[in-house]
Length: 180
Image 1 (tube, rainbow, N blue to C red):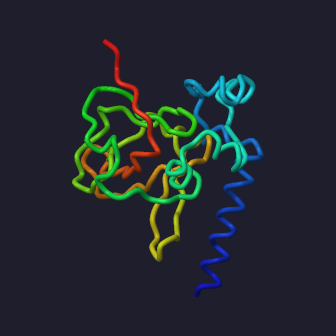
Image 2 (image 1 turned 135 degrees about the horizontal axis):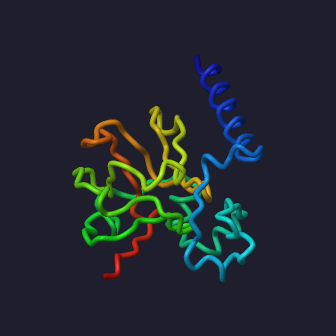
């Protein structure tokens, strides 16, 4: 029933929030430092790869309106509209909000969906996957483990070796090409 689903969602949300506050968050957090964020949010916020928790007003000041809608409000960009969809250079894809490294170009593949797709993450601790009940569907949402920004969704129809398809919003990622 709808009441049971609402109860389960509330319970999952409460447990996820509590885990993030109660010390078990290390398994969900990345130890990567955000490039360029030191000047914007201060060195203390980045020390030790600490979680980055900012108010909505602080996020609005750091992100474009389009980035804020996707990263902080879980919007989805139009397929084929993102700058990174057709990116093929070697490099690293990071969270656009906090620069937490999420994927490498070696993990990217052409899924034909219109969004950048990857078959694996740099590290299991780089992201958190949680059940998303929005839009009348049940999907697995991918969020940045460091700043809790919405990145996209993961599906089980990807290529070997993982059979996963991390379908990401291009605007939720930044790209740093490898320098040879």
